[in-house]
Image 1 (cartoon, rainbow, N blue to C red):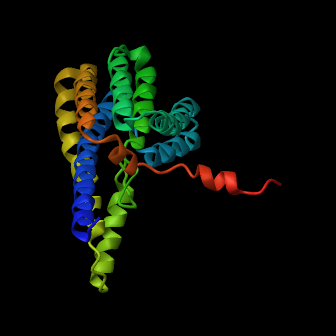
Image 2 (image 1 turned 90 degrees about the horizontal axis):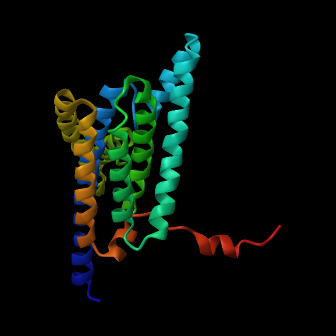
Image 3 (image 1 turned 90 degrees about the vertical axis):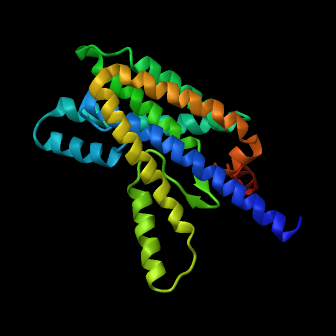
Amino acid sequence: MTYHRRRLIKIRRKTTGLALVGLISFIAGMTDAVGLVLSGDFVSFMTGNTTRAAIAIGNGDHNHALVLLAAILIFVCGNALGVVLAHAASRPAFVVLGWVSVLLSIASTFSAPDTVTVQFYLVALAMGMVNATVEHIEGLPIGLTYVTGALSRFGRGIGRLIVGDRDFAWTMQIVPWVGMLLGAIVGALLVHHFAAKALLFVAVLALTAAFLTLFIPPALQHRYRQRVARQALLSQPLR
């Protein structure tokens, strides 16, 4: 394979990955805004939930603290479940986004005040799962439902540029932030007009994104995920 062909393949892989990241971050932003308005707590920003849980404990509000700590655990389990589903599927993005759509659809039905916690947990589970669709692009880590890391990497990239580094790969980190910002704006508008039913709009968009990923070759989808180091585990000596 010539250098020119390898370069074209790399550009195509990077462009497709960034388009997918932008779309999924848009969906995540919508879900974040809708979930925050409906529950009053974060559905993917677990740093914020950790701080709020600690404050709740300090204030003696142990019930709210338990709700938040349970949400953190569910979010972690969602990430793990997303990886398992993606690993078992030939088209990982389609399968994961499909399940995200199902979970959000179910969550939209829990609109009664006494079931809002169940809705909160279902959305947190979905937001954990969606992170398994794209884990990195060309070796650079990408966050889909949280952008603090992306903004940090973007800022450090600016710093390296100032000191003379001319590798501009860090600029892709702005894509998930823009996607989440735009998605959150749309989500805020939707929840204002449709309340819990806004989750149905997000579910439909997630399902649409799932079908769009069918146009991405399976081999290319697997390039966006962290490889399981099975061979390395097998090569380790027994103790």
